[in-house]
Length: 439
Image 1: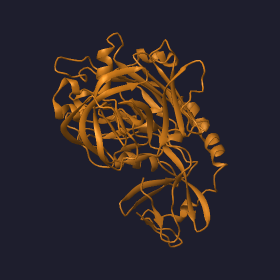
Image 2: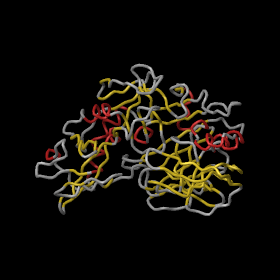
Image 3: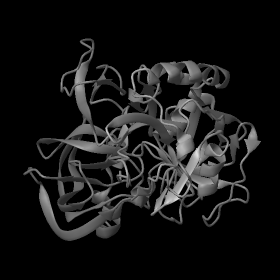
Image 4: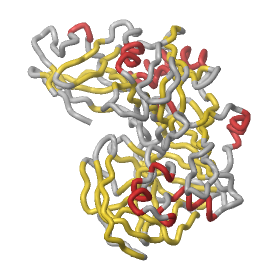
């Protein structure tokens, strides 16, 4: 997250609520189930708080941007980003027991940052699942990566390690888990829960091969196939977007996408959302009093904290409503010695142009649905993306969330500094009292 400043006063944005969860999570599970239940607490802890279940994985928050799950790699516990947007496992910073080393080196790049090192094999424990000889990247150099590593939950075809080695033994962990547990249906499902103020994620439920009983009706929802058909990511066709009941025109830069649609990645490793600029403008331009800041490489909106728009997405026939609280994030800045509250856009323009997606929808979308990620059957060609799909069950009651927004946000603002007068801000980054936003 880059910092921004006015020349006459500091514009130090401090996220008031966590972007993903509070300070620590613990994943626990029923001894007779396949699923993992995790919850959030304000202080880091490695202990389960529900004595009915046994502790499996402890999860903490770092940089307010990622889920970090405790995974045992080579006899050491690491807090790893749980990421449906990638497929490879890497760790750094610890001496671990390695089964075998290779001379193959690789550099893994992400939307933000990179990690490089040598490919090796070791034992990995994810909850109660054990993979005795899991490939991973033993990282010795990172760039803009503040965590111990990443646990990719994507397809074999997305794995850079598998591409490098061209070996069946170098498959991602999910492929190994499903192969070693053939009676387990090859899907995982994710429900993100909200904090008491409804502004952020407080934890949730992850299941492998079974549905959370609360959302079992998802089994009857449409299965949206990967798009384009040869996609190696959890990308599907976005068929519609509406703001206040008005359609937003969609177009795609992805080869093979149907006219009037866009391709969207559903990514557990992203807290906010990156979407085309015209889609961002359609959302916040519909909220009276919003200011679009475009200066010195900055492109975001500052929005009245009590302003709302009715946003929904469709991947087929039905529209999935987004809670208006998801559209903005309360933040604090200092003008001289005085603190004020503003709200900034949670849907942002894409960080860079990609050729395989138009929309990247993270937790601000996923908190509103129960998401099921159906892997394809493992083929003789070592593929697990053929026939893969995603299902959604809406968790946001459109009328109720819109009705509750004003009351909920007003209550949340009571504990924050007074609201800043947005009429002082101009779109070129200047303020009426002579200030200017600098990158």
